[in-house]
Image 1 (cartoon, one colour):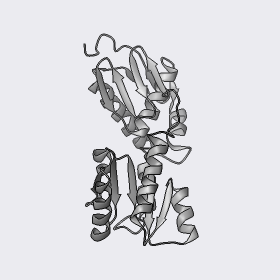
Image 2: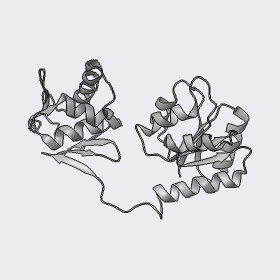
Image 3: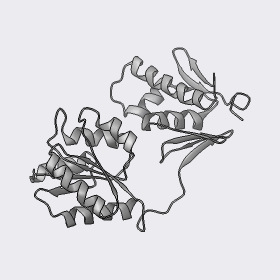
Length: 234
């Protein structure tokens, strides 16, 4: 069974989509709080997202970018806006497909099935999973997960990128400039934002029993020392 997340503020349309998806044997979850879309996405962990453009507070393009920053989950726009530029913007912001309203439910299901086959099924690319390892600690770059021994925790995309950078260069120092370039593609970010992300990574490491491994070199950058064998959980 696959899970489909519906981000649609028209209750009637959302209900019809939900009913039709469930009739095909899958699980459908409609968003109710349009201020907390990303948080709900992380809780639901859908296989496909159906996303409208005209939404309260922030439009679908915004939420598409937010979801895409943490996941490669297929996103299909469903909107009454049929203009060429709307479809271009949807694809440019990370969408995988676009359906205009009014729509046929069979077309929606066919599009969903196509994405499921492409990403999870018969047409999914067969390749070795990307990961980085150091002294028993493994970060899975595509599933956004970190593992040590028999313990696993989920990561955000930025936490994954930061850990990958530190692990690949350990025990060498990684400059602040290098980390900023990896995380934000040269866009301006203040020191506090970087510090917050480093603090989050320290917290994730602590959840695995790894303490004092991520060292701050004042004025220069950060270093990851692989000293977790003694402190890691058995």
